[in-house]
Amino acid sequence: MRLPALPVVVAFVALASPVHADPRDVLRNCQALLERANQSSAEKPSEADIARCRQVVRDWTLRDSRMLVDEDGKPLR
View (tube, rainbow, N blue to C red):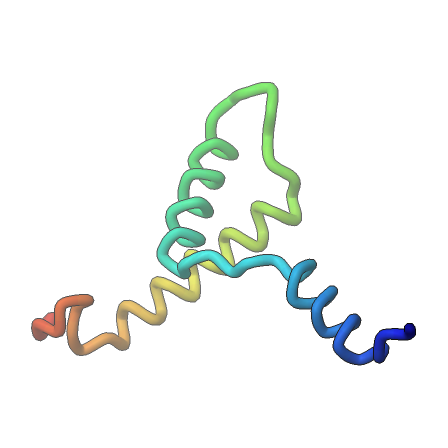
């Protein structure tokens, strides 16, 4: 008995794909990584991770500046 290839491939991709974290968790993790990068420790993050996290923080800063309401729907201004 031979299984059709398409369902097997779809199942594999669904199981192997990474789960995307909550965007706010990504922001918090990036802020923590940047804090660690600024400290003088032996274990520094890679330059690629630092650049990616700087971009995440920059995007969130721009996003927050365009927001009219907070997470609860209350006006910011």
